Length: 343
Image (cartoon, rainbow, N blue to C red; front, top):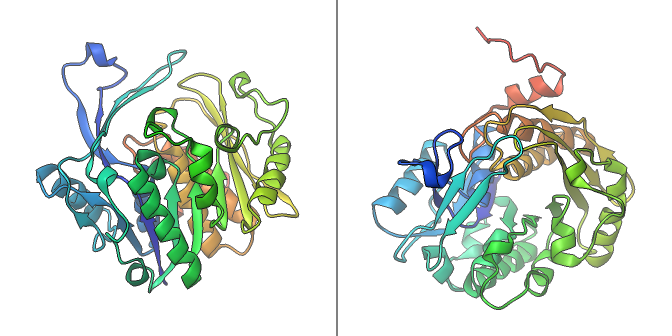
């Protein structure tokens, strides 16, 4: 099987214990994570060969991040060493009516200073069949956006499938460009486009009518119009996928997704996640499951079902990474949500 390549920033994640607020906490739990690295870990857990491309500082923190990826069988041979620091994000986990909060400390991180020519994309893609990036990466800096475009163009030239998660992050777009003007050229080179209920609206002003995600109920069929509009804007795209999160509270979400293939809207079961352990990385776990599903199942409905079930399970796992197996995901897909002890 050929490999999946992902490109983006891995960060040190510092989380308050339990549900403590940052102002209450005297310690932080240290892990690593980042959109594209999270996808790579999911795929590696499913037995897919992966290669994660990034730039990290050659210091103890950078080396720890790379070692963490290797522990999860992610290929790190294409990582560039350089820069002064690894980006950091602080996470305060919410509960009930208090939402979670993220504080970024990633200015001047190693990846933000990356420039075109840093990576030999033709060499990286020579045994790859899929390339994945997210809208977080071009939000970091102009250099990161330029390298992302360089990678997409190389993948297009070499016949590698390209996917993106739009991943709008308002707090990151600080270098003078709007998301729409940067993302349009990048997304135009994508075959598979993923977003949540607000990404398409915030980035491209494309949105369904009459949808209120705060009501706790999201109507799947309402998003067919989003799929149609996205394909009109980006004719290369073959599949548009929307994750559907209904936020009843910080601890209880409904979770599902739809896939528009240009002719049919595929829908997935809706899961009620009533005691969320950690929702960070939920969209990335969906993307990892979707890539696996599209590579291994015969139809889009099954692929979508795998993605939704995989990301449902991620909400039960602390940290950015979705540490589940194909067997566990397929068990949930079959309807077994009992949580019984396996022995």
